[in-house]
Amino acid sequence: MSLLCIKNARYLGKPVDLLIADGVVESLSPAGTMEIPEHAETCDAEGQVLFPSFIDVHTHLREPGFEWKETVATGLAAAAHGGFGSVLCMANTDPVNDSAAVTKQIIAAGKESWPNGPRVYPIGAATVGLKGEELARIGELAEAGCVAVSNDGRPVGDTEIFRRVMEYAADFGLTVIDHCEDPYLARKSQMNEGHTSGLLGLKGQADVAETIQASRSILLAEYLNLPVHIAHVSAKRTVDVIAWGKARGVRVTAETTPHYLTLDDTSVLGYNTLAKVNPPLRTPADVEALREAVKNGTIDMLATDHAPHAAHEKEVPFNEAPFGFTGMDLAVSITYGLVREGILTEADLIRLWATEPARVFGLPVNTFEQGAPADFFLFDPDREWEVTPENLYSRSHNTPWLGKTLRGRVSAHWIGGVKIV
Image (cartoon, rainbow, N blue to C red; front, side, top):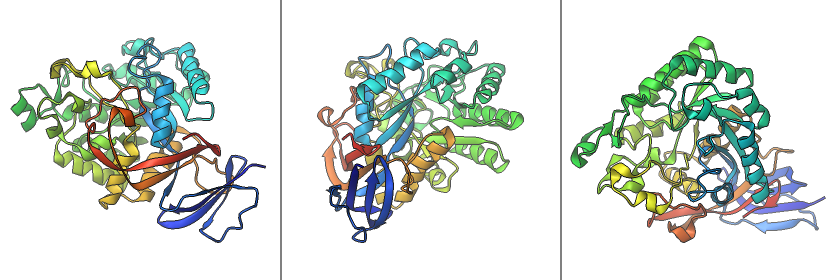
């Protein structure tokens, strides 16, 4: 029997000792009360915070087709060093992940590059080629290993087709993740519509472009009595309609990202392409509403929407730059800052990054109860580090935090009791 003991870690504010036996949790005890077996490997975690491995339910690994931006191997490297033990990757690859062959290729690439984890769980395309015109072979995708379906990046404008996606996905036990964006209101937009877009002379996207589409999905979910998951919520109005749906008993869940909790549209000033993302960064009022929503549970979970791009792709005029930035390297450091501010607690982070994602998408999670999978990481809350290309593990470094100093970073990570970082 292989034994591992993590001593003197801090879990939910209290010092603990964690004993792992053959890849599962044996016990979690107050520090100093456990009799440690002589042959156990030990690790003194004094000053470190203990977390279960987090789950990122929304990321873009780019492979196959866009390997100059990211590969499965480099994306999982960012996940491993960022505290993520499970990663759900979107289907906007080339070819699109709308067939079993692509799904299996992604899973195989993950197992080959990181055999002990992080684990990769593909999200299949909701429609063929993400074109929104014809349903993908959802049963085939589910059998191949997809855990959800989505048209992320290209919203399904045809409501009849979206209804059929929800129905067929439910037949195979899959949740639909909806990229909520009215394709007409959002057409050719570059950032949030408001004072800042007026200053910069850029075409803005009204927040109702997101909210209208979310409302459609919530009403369909109520009518069909089927689940729907709202991706990357950015706007207060969308929070309001999600709360309305939940109050009516609709089976709606939702996610937001660290950047919508910490940045607003002034980050784009100076035509900063590193802050160009879709949905766009909104107003300070939206940031405050989202912070309250993750605290009170209206927003169920966090996700990174990790969207890597090569440096040259962002070094162009603002209108030509692609949307999105990387996130898995930085997410825990950024969201722990909200704990430091008193907005969230460590228990909130576990709920938002681990237990709720696992519940909604049917994934394994470490609860630190006996027999739970020994997937966990240690986080140094006081370590200061500069966000530079050399300090990031993703192949791409397109983030508005580039050049800034963050406080707190993952120091070690185990999956199944095996140290991967």
